[in-house]
Length: 296
Ligand code: NAD
Image (cartoon, rainbow, N blue to C red; front, side, top):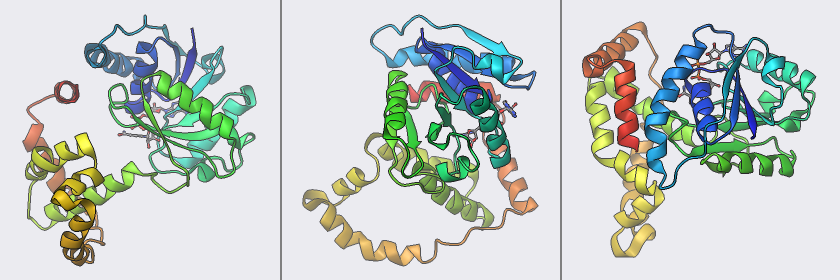
């Protein structure tokens, strides 16, 4: 049985733990937070209810899940490390130094949403063994994982990483060039920025924005992405006709969509209050259960 070491067992690390475990791997967790085990158990419960529904065949028998007091112990017998500690470069560097002091031969996949491999590997003993493997929440249901290595890195390490990740039911998307926030989060940032403006300027509430997304373009994106959707928007003449028709009007709008509103206390209060009014009647666990059911 293969063994993965999970460093950091929060929202994302817990999701990785569930995905590896339900794919038949042993999972060894290192997270100094005494609450980590309780939080991972809750994620695991949700994953057990939903992940098997995505498969027509039974999943392999679960591996064993263990929690460890030290990183050294958690690394024992592991062939893969997933790092999902908070998004702070100094912390990630410290953890890589410790891991590579014990196991310089093991690949570390970082869940980082924003840092590039060049940033992650600064000062590392074995830079080629630290790569980005950026997943999406909930990691146990969403297949995409963005895989990015440092330019000039070792192609074999990337290939092995893709094998590990597709083996646990994921869709590894290899990103050839390093860029801050990789690919998918750059889209999310653009949408998030516009949502902040719409709330800041009193145009729409959090609920109205969510409805604008989920009743139309969110569903379209989910099944066909951006370009095939627009290809159809061009009718029988496809993409060229779409761009000819909408290109100029869209580029006019772009010029007004560049700034980011300041995240003032007032704006944060407005967003948090509207968000509470929207779904505060549900616990986070209930809301996550609703999400998982919809995703399946
Ligand atoms: P989180 O705060 O939920 O979890 C972080 C965990 O790391 C906590 O359980 C904490 O106790 C633990 N931790 C702190 N210091 C540690 C240490 N020294 N050793 C081991 N564990 C330690 O954060 P998160 O949302 O899971 O984010 C983790 C990473 O995943 C970040 O790099 C983030 O950018 C990335 N990510 C987050 C999301 C998301 O939607 N939340 C999505 C994709 C990627």
